[in-house]
Image (cartoon, rainbow, N blue to C red; front, side, top):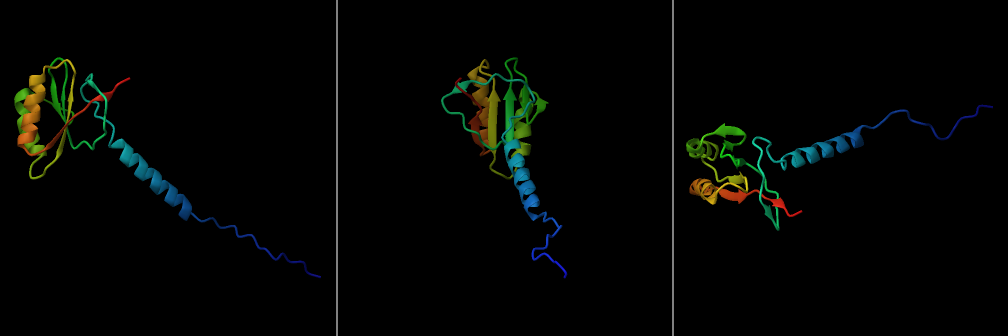
Length: 130
């Protein structure tokens, strides 16, 4: 008398669900990494009621000792217009200003005016109230 099981166990493993999970994790980390602010020059940002996260195409940083950088590239005050013109050539981009709260407003207005003349959307980076 031969006894045989009605239910056979298949030893194979399907990787399709594992690849879906890995793909979703990859997308998650790619999206969240674009929200991280550049760590070029240290800046003490001003506070505001609302602090929205925007996609940063071009960042201009001004420190309290008046050092300037465009996308983590240290430049002089006179080179800012040339750098922005190169980066925003033939497109309407987003420029985020990371300006220390101790910097005089004239620098904010000057750099914002340069970006606006290049038809870019200008945003000021802030930190939320604590």
